[in-house]
Image (cartoon, rainbow, N blue to C red):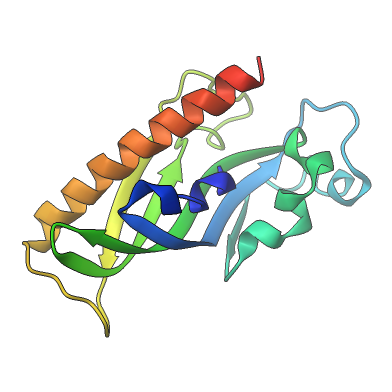
Length: 154
């Protein structure tokens, strides 16, 4: 899911940076990486905030990719849409992933966008309407990218 930060080709979302990740070790993996073994049976989820979180070894290393369950990622983007420009936080999540002991593989992927207030923004549209438009645009990008990734791994 952290790969969604690279959406520069979308013509709407730019300069993606992962600022929040929520995950836990996958209790069903037989051979957890050494650094995650101490979490087993103790950690229900890790909710990490910061900058450039996609560079964390738990997320970046291929050794961890099959050993963690990623529930949510938040990505800060600069956006441009219909004459509106500014910063937003895009949340991409599987809300039920960490709720129980068993992974809910039927959970839908949820996408939402929150516009950040600050310098350099040029917002002409109604904020809730613009957030809705950005969410729909991001949803289309995420779904096409997510489905492409899922089918590549099969």
